[in-house]
Image (cartoon, rainbow, N blue to C red; front, side, top):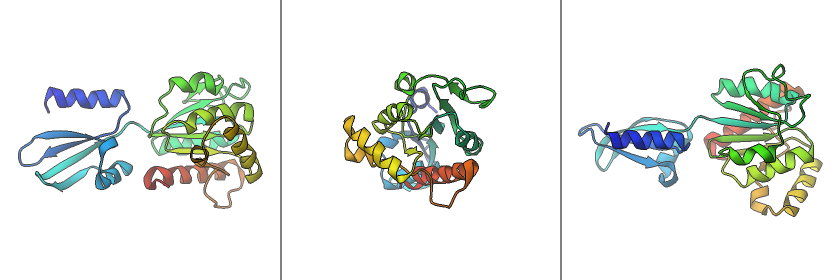
Length: 221
């Protein structure tokens, strides 16, 4: 690997940019392709984090996928979050929990994760809400969820889920539209949150959220 290729890989990691490193198996020459310009076949490899040998015009090449670590931002230090975190961690996600309510956002309730007892609008702008980030709003409190959703829906996150009934979702969509979001942006919300599996209780709801988030990550739906 040349210094130039190595530096480009390191820069992509720092900037949380997904890239593919192609190595020609006959000549050893290498090239880097960013996900932003990937064709359909390469995009599928990015979606499934699938490295492997591919046939190209230049011969057989090994395609090594270099994607940023998965991250899940949770708005609301609530019971569903407590159920969701261990499942998401097992799937390889780094977790950030944000909740301005100090009584909820405690290290005792949420050990081993990044916990921010701040208003979402104060901390989210400094975070890279990118295409390897999932986002869920769970407080059921418009004062906390709405400002967070405004930022998430204007970002590149691959999944936005929001807790609440169909009636709650309709009211939320009205408020977000009044705040200037387009119909296409608002339509990105998955709500009521989670796949329809008849979930009962916080842990089963967490399972349904993780299933829906995985579907969006891998299949883009």
